[in-house]
Structures are given as structure tokens and as C-alpha cells.
Length: 197
Image (cartoon, rainbow, N blue to C red):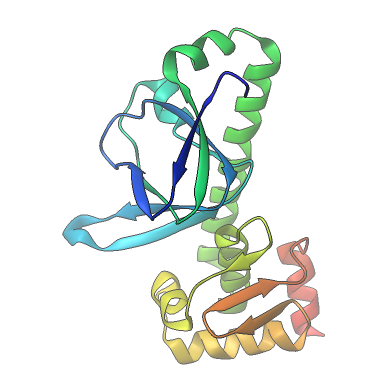
């Protein structure tokens, strides 16, 4: 980290662009970044809100492949940047390889969980898991019910009902434009038990 250069974004700015090469790995030191997928026709899907300690760009830098999504720094965000050449040198160290592999594994686990719930879960379970994916380091999601409805492919009224169930069980707290996860540790089995009691 001492060898990384600090980049400060006083205003929101895209620093990785989908389809372009990543120059290395970016570590969030302070603030928040959004990973955004641009689909055919220009539709944008927010994949994740990332906070301090999270990393982006390393998969594409190591693979020498184009970025699969764009990353946008929010205002007052500080990133630490490690160029690809330095990253490759550090990858020769077993502890670094293990840590990078752990990041990959964590992302794969989240992707698998999302796919399983999308196919087999009810809307409340899907909403809870999506909120966990989108939450920042303080377990907060800044998104309207309309935005969540668009992500989940349902009506705003359906999201409102599902949020009501989660709020009634003390799993979330919601105010205008923000949701706070109070029970981030719940598994989907825990959630299923709570909601059927």
C-alpha cells in the first residue's frame, strides 16, 4: 500500500470504462465507488456499491482483458492505485496470490447466491440479497424503491411490500432514498425461517 499512488476524486468520475483495459488495481481508501454494467441499448445496471477496502480492476489487469463493467468514484473518494506491472511482481508472493484468490472466490460466491435466488427465491429473499450486494461499508444502500424495482424486474409496489416484510422483522430500516441493513449476517435459510414464522 505504501507504494500505491493516491488518487482523489472531489467530484463523481468514471475511472474504469467497460470494454477498455484496466491499468492496474484500485483500492478504495475512503468514500465509495459504483460498479455499473452498460447493456445493449445503453441501459445501466448498478452491480455493486463498494467502500473502503474493496478493490476493482485487478481481474482484468491480471487477465489482460477489457473491463466487464465501468467503475465510477463518488464525490470525495480516495483510491490507492497499483499499476499492473507492480501487481504482477507482487503476485509472485504466495500471500498475495492467496489474497487475490480470496477476493475472486468471494465474488464468485456472491454471484452464485444471486443466481440461485433469482431462480428459486421469492421477491423478499431476492430483495434482501440484492440489498446486501449493493450495500456500502456501513451496510447502507442509497437507492429508491423505483430503482430497486428496476433491478429486480418487478413493480415498485411489490418492492414496497417486500420491504415492509423485512422492516417488520427488524432486518432493514428504510428512509427516503436509503435502506440500512440491520441484520446483514442472515443467510437465506435464516431469512426463509423468519418470514414463514
